[in-house]
Image 1 (cartoon, rainbow, N blue to C red):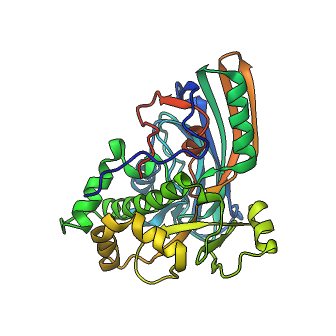
Image 2: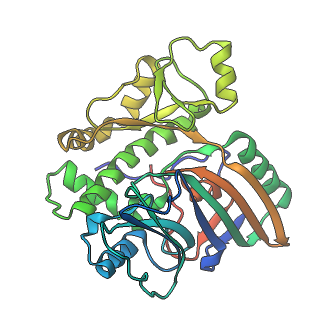
Length: 350
């Protein structure tokens, strides 16, 4: 099994230090939905503001409370236990009057409505973050320069540590399942391990391109990703117009989420990815055997509506929006060497 390494920093490893998630309210996340419930339909939609609960745990509570199969409960994305988060859930209740939502410590039901469809995984435009870093120590001017650089140049679109389990334990489990053939019967766990494996491959390629400086460039043979879309196209001629679109963050270099089929890069880009993933061949073969479809992911992102302020001399408040599937912790790690007081950690494996 390849050793997990720490992903490269785009702006150099930060010297300033801070504490993240000293309290749950320091890490505020609010979903930005694709659609809102229309007020009628067989699915009950509930907006939960929660602390101390994972999304999966709360979905299970809703299934038991409304006496429906777990598959009839939907949510768009997974939210941290150690945070103050708002997210929608849906429960399929055809022809049934809904009971009141369950009373749970750490959960407030902010809105309840009806909709015609189940809330699908990935069915959100993004997330809005409000993060308070405490006990910030380091040179203020250098940190302000990093903040400006992140605002202008963005950050690598790594998968964050939440994707890999505590201590990145899911990487070893994914390797055993896919490369060594160990059996995993729980469907949800199997899905998590498949995601961890693909994310690990992506992070390894992304880290290589951050380290060599090509994460902000289009390479010959690149599969360029359209901003805000899953669509990619082959880069043949890197002309002035394409460079302008790259500078405007309208298109991005992309990295692999391995599996079967899908478009593949060519030329220099293909050679770079093959070299970066040489030791991952058994893992990728396992993904193909598991019938996971290959896709691509943008190598970079620029936080939207990015702002910051200093409430006190040693606390820094960050506000920004990210597209669905991107991680606030990957923004924070480019700014400060933070200790995560929740114990979740900020190490991004590659």
